Length: 362
Ligand SMILES: NC(=O)c1ccc[n+]([C@@H]2O[C@H](COP(=O)([O-])OP(=O)(O)OC[C@H]3O[C@@H](n4cnc5c(N)ncnc54)[C@H](O)[C@@H]3O)[C@@H](O)[C@H]2O)c1
Image (cartoon, rainbow, N blue to C red):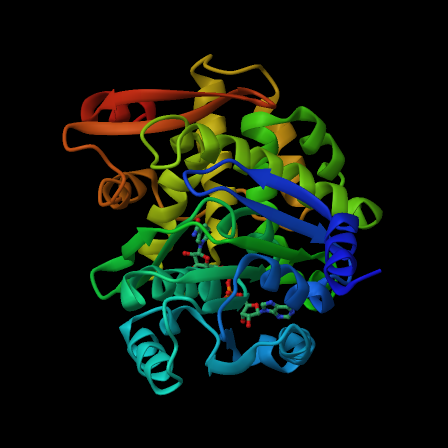
């Protein structure tokens, strides 16, 4: 067998989900597939340099295997490591990334590899969208949130002082390599954070997924759970890449979730915890107003609690209302809210500010 046939057969053996975005790509998904990174990337990119961008935690755990694999595939590999955490997702790290790319003579034919959680993926994607007006990039997501959510859909960006994700671009990767084994080193809190998005996907699109994770004991089925999520997000993104309609439904729980995060100034509560509370409050309000199936709130809360997520907050509803009006996704004359009418089914409601206030029972 010649080398090319060998490469093709290695790639063929890995499960793939095709994303038919404006620039289509495959998401490779499996256990222990980090070692195949070089083979996958080489098939899609013919450049000389591959630059791994990762944070200090992930670097210690997973850089070497990816680096060796890229070298075996014939790349000159360099690595940029930044301190973990949201404050790094800013110009303070992005500018040194650009300088690093210049120092390493990276050209438009080369490829950036974002190895890590959503922060790494968002920032690497944005560097790839903007450096030299765009070069290839590959996402290797290593948190549950990044595997089921942020690595799918092409949203990239950084935070600025005025707010999170305010500067960014839509940039699709040439591939996503999703190695489930990396989830084994996540802390319980970071894993639970990703579960909020998993439960959200179940609530808006799939009773089957919701049931799979309901009791919180799905260790054996984790590969399947991640796949179901990727499929849901991929199909939504294919239908509405630039978030003009259907993609907004992925914001279920996020209107109040973002308000809660902003209230705490992005400290002392995680994004997933805030989204969990946001889903719970909206579903409770919807049920009280006869807008969803009876018992839905209790069912959702059980699922969230079984997955170690909170369901309420001490912040009063008036304050949540004020903070939610500052959301960048709000319309100039009103607000779109997403409500689930039952598990797996959701609707978008376009409300005026007065109607929104009424819905919140203020
Ligand atoms: N682009 C999108 O569509 C989208 C969607 C949702 C969220 N996001 C963004 O994603 C970011 C949050 O992502 P996140 O929760 O993955 O955060 P993250 O990237 O900070 O990762 C969380 C922590 O886990 C560590 N880590 C990562 N992988 C690990 C592993 N396998 N084992 C042990 N530790 C590991 C990291 O070092 C970090 O400390 C936010 O900035 C958010 O805005 C983007």
